[in-house]
Image (cartoon, rainbow, N blue to C red; front, top):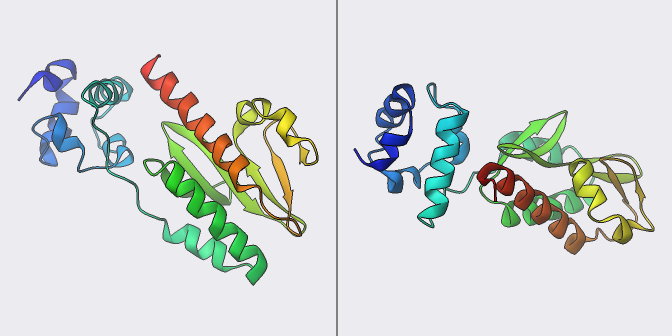
Length: 182
């Protein structure tokens, strides 16, 4: 065992050893969500692991695509489906460590907390980056319908992928800063 195990409680140590983790480098073979979901890993242990990975310039394994999100997207007509897949590919490439899952009936990306969600509607595609994700881009959102935590992109228009990418990056950095307290 090494320094990592000096920083975490016995239940967390047992949980990590049960999946073959002997040192911090072994964590890189697992996603953050896999580690977070282990029985015995609490918030403090996960925080210590996050900090140790950051200080060692290591990271978790990338998350896989969710079959539930595939099914959600496949349920739409071709034009909307293409736009949803484009948004998904951009989000997955921007935040590959985030867990992709269905939450609130829509594709969601989770890393310590929800980062961003998106959903299709009859006339628009909604992006839900939390209120902070909207507030940080208010001037760039002129011309779109938006509210406290939601942005609407008309289905008939080109989706502003660069804007969605920057909002997603902003949210992920916000969450990482809150985790690492930097």
